Amino acid sequence: MNVRRVILWQAVAVAGAIALAVALSRFFPVVGLVAGLQERVMSWGAWAGICYPLLFAACNILLLPGGILAVGGGFFFGLWWGFLIVLAGNIISTAISFALSRFVARRWFRRKLSSNPTLKALGPAVERESWKIILLSQLHPLFPTSLLNYFYGLTRIPFRTYMFWASIGRMPGLFFYAYVGTLGQLAVRIMRGKSYPRTVEYWIWGGALITTVLLLVVLSRVARRAIQMSTERGPDRPDDRLRTPGTIEINS
Image (cartoon, rainbow, N blue to C red; front, top):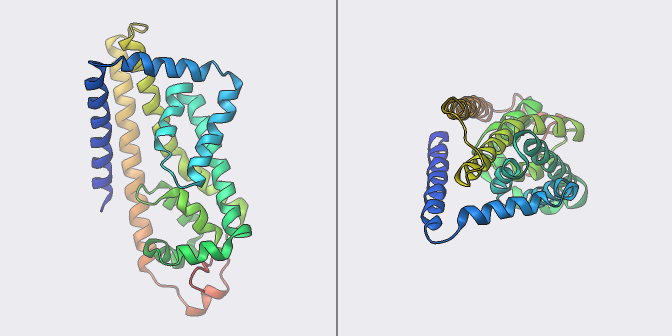
C-alpha cells in the first residue's frame, strides 16, 4: 500500500460519509441533530475544553481511531481552538504511552512489538538518525502514530527529545483534521440558514483546503522516501546497536 492509495481511500471515505449524511437527511433531521450536539458540547463551557483533549488522549492510548475526534475538535471549537485542544490531547497521550512503554510494562511491549516487521525495520534507522526518524515517522500517513509512542518508549531516546519532535511531526495532520472539522461547522451553519457566505469565501475555503492537502501530500512523500532510504541502509557496525543512544531493544 502506498501513500496515494491511502489518500484515495481517505477521500473516498470522506465522500461516502458526506453522501450518507445527505441521504439520511431526507428521512431524519441529521443537520438538526448535529447542530444540537455541537450546542450541547459548547454549553459545557470550560469543561468541554478540559474533557475533550482527555477523551482524545484516551483514544490514542487505547489505540482506537482518533481521526473522528480530531475532526470534531475543529467542528466543536473552531479552527485554532480545535487545533490547540486536539494537540493538547495528543501531547498527553504521547507522554503517557511513552512512559507506559518505558517505565511500566517494558517487557510486555517489547514482546508484543518485536513481531511487527514495520517497527523492526525502523530500529536501525532510529539508531542512526534518532530525532529525524521520529519527525518523519509522525509525518508519514502510513505509520500508526499511536503505536509509535509505545515503540519509541523501548528505545533509549530521551523523553524530552521524543516529546518535542513527535509533537512537531503531528501538527500538520492535526491542523488538517481541525480544518476539515471547521468546514463541517460552516456547512451546518449554511444548511441551517445561519450563515450566508459570499462566492469569494467559498474560493478562499476551497483554496486553503487544497493547499493544506497538497502540503500534506508533499510532506508525506518526503517522509516516505527518507524513511525508506534510512531503513534500507544497514548500521555501519553491528556492535553499534549496543552503544548508540537511539538503539531499539525489542529484539533482545
